[in-house]
Image 1: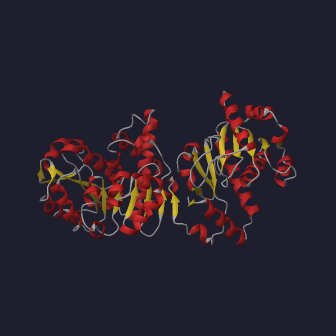
Image 2 (image 1 turned 180 degrees about the vertical axis):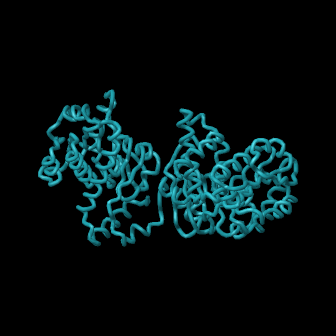
Length: 515
């Protein structure tokens, strides 16, 4: 799914119109696709009554087209119309198909609106589109406010489907009006508008679906867009085939240098995640004292026991590790290393000599910051996985600056450092040196827990070991990680109860859905 600004979407539609796909045809395609999604959702729920809140803009037009198609398919389709001409051809078309229409100006006390809500199984929110300015005023604010009031009083409120965006959301900034109507599902047209993947707007989006409005195949403004949103279709296509005659060597060896006495579990989480995502062999390079505690918990792993200094990997360990590197397909450095001057020297020596695909995470990133020209010493196209605090250390920017411009910051430093950046957090951003960017459409506190980053790093190195390129491995790993967090929270019934081990346990179910 492409990710666009409002201005980009307008230019795309303009180019499409000039290429022969008229605005009317785009609206027809959008409305028909919307109706198909609603019809599919309703199939298992025995729903057949739909109400559309219809405004004056293109979203209102999309809603009217969808209502017409639903009426023709046997639905009882009703429209509540605000600030739209009574002689509108789309209104006439709905009436001809057997739909019903109420104009808001004739419903001064909203009694008709309340009656319409009572019988509706599905509500199409097409009142406002992407071009709004906040705060909302006048009749629009009143209709949305009344709609929320009416729905709050209903024992079974309708399933709310937002047309392109929930009414009252700024589709660039992600701000939302007080009167914004929360959707159960947002059906966005052609591309995801960037504000939908920002807070607070995302809280009103619900699930996200996309309608293909059949843009011309040669539409460069659209197909050359470097920004995308990850979904199951994209990630499923990135995962390697697993042929029947495969063996462990087929799926590579992930070498992971991790852990210290203070952070023993980091190596276990990362190594287990690499196995769960399909790596053929995982080798854990750890401080020697950790072996007794870890070996029984992941018997599938092989081990490199490293020299240590009070339980931290020592500078002397570099030579030991480098003797094994030629056996590995990909290398992860960082989870649980801790902060020790001898470990910092180990990191500095290792990164300058490792020539296989590399992932740097957690404490590995903090050690990098102390190494002059570290980004030039790393093997080509490494993957860096900072959270906002680690990104602040690496860039010298404040956390506030980074959070306010996550997409732009990730892309800027991916270009400057010439490595793939995975900026973790709500709506994790994956940025490549060539300007490509993918956003993971997930924001959940289920992943706000120690150890979940180790799981993510293990997923990415496991995919890299199987031969995925750096950018694709980062996308797939981050998507699987996010979905596993959501599934773990759903299974436990609470985001507060999710531990990193629960995310790890959910990976297999997510993988089965993607295969």
